[in-house]
Length: 430
Image (cartoon, rainbow, N blue to C red; front, side, top):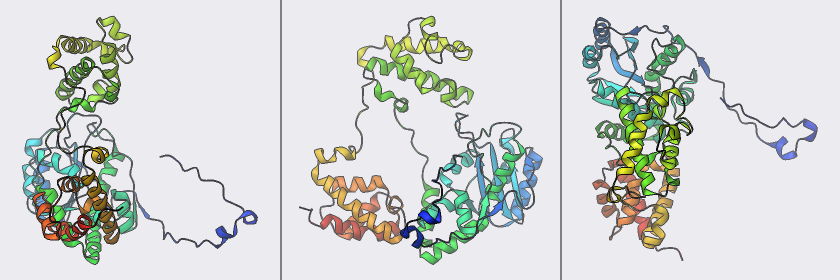
């Protein structure tokens, strides 16, 4: 953690009158440290018999179930869960290691199928839980609820402090959770992530009811649960860092071939692609286009023993790029799909640019009024599409009908359609 570098305090005899008269802000009592689970760190369950007993205990519990997962992003290719944390009233907390016996998790999956799940940032955890055939019937996302409430910081530690006055021990979220055995302090951290998640859910729900936003939250949770898995991006190789510096289509082909070769190795070995070959090395090799192994070894990062073992693979990728006929070279820019970049709207359609400016301004005012981020009021892509297409008869009903086609929730339509209609109907500024 980077320490702050605040200026030294001003002595009394040099303090300005304005500083002397400034009100003292009462930040409230400091949070009570929550350094370990009340019942201690539970053992890590790894065997089919332990999973069966965990399922029995969960089924005997009551109320919603708090869940969290730990993955190994940045270390592994897959997004699988390497540890699952579960807590339920009457069942206690559990740490589940699903790696060795994923097929034996059925008793736990059966106990989880039905009760409400409490997740913090559900989009991050649902995919890897679904991979294990865990099915969620009802969802409560405390992070999303915090956004709807306009909480400035919605990470778990900040929300636990805000609502419960507790300070969570943090620090291992970005660790390599595929490591075995897992260190004791990591397990303590993992167990704390669900220790008070049920209490947080109750406090957040009370705040939603007080703000009149409980219906908003219920609709948002249902939308998250029903959201299909995202479609893989086309041309993912174009996301290589610094690819924008490459002007030659032949060099782009080399980047594409090297990226594909790296992807194959990463997927097969379940290692994060950047740990197989960094993006910088791909660009360097594509630009240099070495014809021999000796030339490849002279490039940064290619001279070490690990890259020498893979050298034949990288040389084959470069050779494949050289053999491509011109007609098969990738274009410098991918085919344009969807809407143009907003910074080009003024040139392509000044009317659409004016509509977008007006609608964005109106939604920003509305977001301030209801204390909810503007991106949670309405998906930005939907706003852009509506403004680009235009609504010929800008009535609230016409806007509402257009928004409904885009999958907008009813609370969003009711709240935003009159505001958008007014913005579209207003005459453009001089």
